[in-house]
Image (cartoon, rainbow, N blue to C red; front, side, top):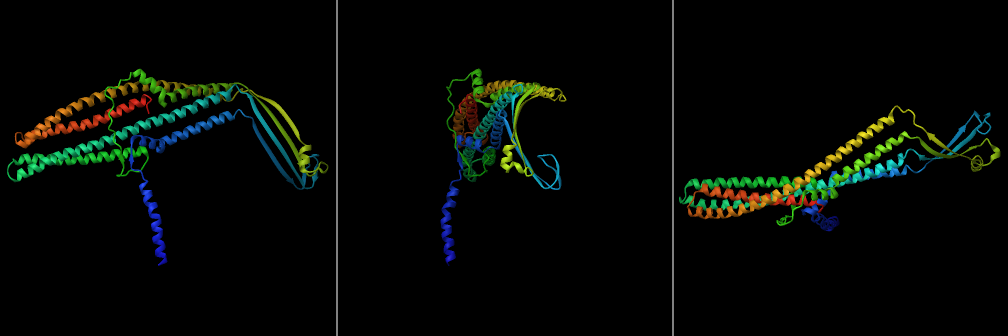
Length: 441
């Protein structure tokens, strides 16, 4: 009995925690939340951030190469039987314990500015990876905007499909009564019944399209798909009277705000310094070295303890080393040639990026203007077909026209409404893309 009571109390204790965990699962998102979630969860965005951090480490390593090196070593030896006395170098037959201590430092004084140029190369490479990261985020953001608007478009289109089905259902119910009473030709009834079946299929297709578009969006967000997911509609249309941008102005702002062109510019500058750093290896290398050495042996009874001997046997040294490259199997020459090719590739990438960005900004403005004009034209078409369908519906119910004429007008009106939904979100998509190129986040 006590066990049962404890189990009930435990269940009552954890029940609020379970329900709280369920309530905390987010299922409703707006566009800004989707963009933020994608930038946080997307695998490509995470990998680009890691690449940027790796480039930062390369830069730190290049800077640290300016510092002197410092190394130390200790060895401890035990010799038995015949061995060499490390103090007198005589051959003795006894157990000898000995050791050596070394401390070395070295610093490059000059190597044709290779270290400094390598630092500049890595600095530009780090900036380039940061811009590459920004480029991936820019592309991901626009992909999310597109996927989000496709979800909203499919959702609104589905509502239109259902409304169209309901209109057909209303007429079908009316004709079913008339057909039962023999007050209408059977062909009229079966025409509308066939249309209703077609509307049902269209609704099913719309539901499948909506689910598919949601899956595409969740893949970008890197979250599990659920039928409970919902997304905030976007009802605000762009301003019809807003001033249009020139292609030159949009290109300049896109070049300043997007990471694509900046990354290509930084990669080119990094390649330039890589070539300079590689050429500097033709020069001699001058380095400064210094060392401290000492030794210990238990055979030297007159020198005292271990620490006393280290101090008494302490030796110091310093010197300059000049290393002159003479022949290395043409390795330096080949590396310079390879660096030239990498620079040329970077220049080609930059030129190609500039051309692509120019073409993209021109296409963005063309798409925006086309989407705007298309929406305005379809809106007028919907108003015209709306009135035409209203008249056809009244005449059909009055028996002035047959089902073929009625369904023809209904199809025109239905298609115009769907086209309006698509055109509305197409315009929003093109406007948001233009805003993004314009530096408006």
